[in-house]
Length: 201
Ligand code: IMP
Image 1 (cartoon, rainbow, N blue to C red):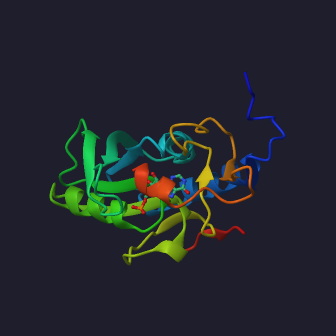
Image 2: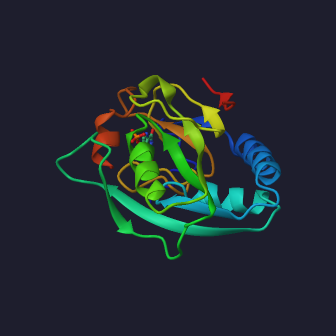
Image 3: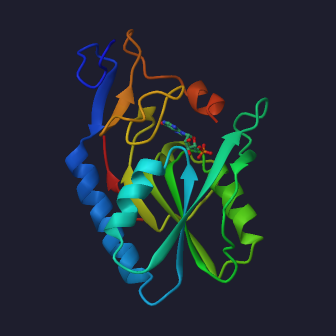
């Protein structure tokens, strides 16, 4: 079996190493703890891509909070529409609570925009976005991201929970997915799969 974590195939180039992820997640946890101190914080993590980030972020937050998960997938035939199918809904009500929506990556912004719209209908006291990665060059919708890990260039990334065709989620770092011909994975992969961040290039 090929061990892609150590292989020299050139399939992945590290964009953000594990130690930088840990540092930044810890900073985000600190910022969130200060901002929501004394408030009823409900963290909502979007599956599957954010599960590793959410698990680390949760442990970096040192105030009382709950965590719940929402599973989504893109509607086949509507790539890039931002309309998503909810495959697993929240277990608890968010009415009257301060919601922090935790996403792996904001690309066009359509998915997060749709989720914000959907969750606002459930009458939370407030709702904010926390995204590990921001690919702002591809943004189609203006979206405030008060808690942002890293700004990244327009490349397809995998690892730390993020996948390409359900693979590579177990990489401990963020890697750029490259084909053997040296091209980055096409943006079609994204379509079919469904303030302050540090810049990475
Ligand atoms: P958006 O609706 O275009 O902002 O897309 C957001 C979703 O697309 C993310 O939650 C990811 O699931 C997926 N996505 C976007 N870019 C990447 C990437 O570079 N790698 C892996 N998934 C991505």
